Length: 416
Image (cartoon, rainbow, N blue to C red; front, side, top):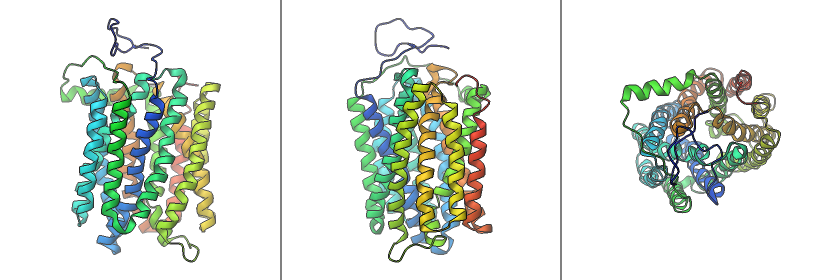
């Protein structure tokens, strides 16, 4: 396996990276904080504030409009993530991209809260996705840059914990400010900015030799070429399928609670989201830690990834057979357990099948297309499924995709 050049010391530059890079002291808590803020914004905006804003603009067409805005903005996420990762690789720096993206998020969220048409909401959220993916691409590359392979399960658990904790924080903020969504957007943007400042102040920059400028055609060929590596390609496919099924359902959770689930008297849909998210997050946090640590101890990644994807499929069947508040609670627990373990261990797995360590940010950016790309398709597909058959087929659709995601890890050979 090729090693990356030295970063910030006096050792001679080599074609291959240090086989056991030492994490910066306090790096894991900083990774947790940075990812928590990122997911707080993504989930708070995408799960609560954006649907409320779109419903406020045009209640009758809320499902189709949310699908349109979510899908178009995800295109920007897909384009900007690998681009920002490649630019970070070229500059040999991570911290400036984390800090710049975090600070720019404040302006993007202020703009999003100020607009009042579906078109302008789409444009503003596209801008938000662009700056957040600059932040995300650089932050994601920190694990393969600085953490030795033997500890990547633990590091990925720290990263993965950002999802349940960030989801809870984001939804609680968004729900508390649901009547003042402009303020909610701004608070979430400031949270990301604060995390970016904290990370860049506390995590020593791991410099890499700057790379020569690469023509756009070569960059595109490199992005596509990495998918020719079989293990990386199967990891990409598995992640894409599970994320597609997850966001097809979770992206419409507020509308599911409004239009499909009979809530107890006195419980509003936004309040129900604020209950379900912490429930799912506790389960997700538990499985993230347990899955990450056990995968390190047992040196097994595929087993955990495949089983958690299969469990996600089972969780999506619960609301099909029990479209009740109790069924939604059970779904949130089981889906949280499944998704937390999957994201923690799959992230560790992916860092072990990167084709070239010196292109880690770029290749992780390509992998992040498997996160952002399905979000392009999910809103369009989900809105079409709901329009044609309601919410029950939507859960079934997600379950099928999760099963396919579980099967996709089997051909991977380079990781147990």
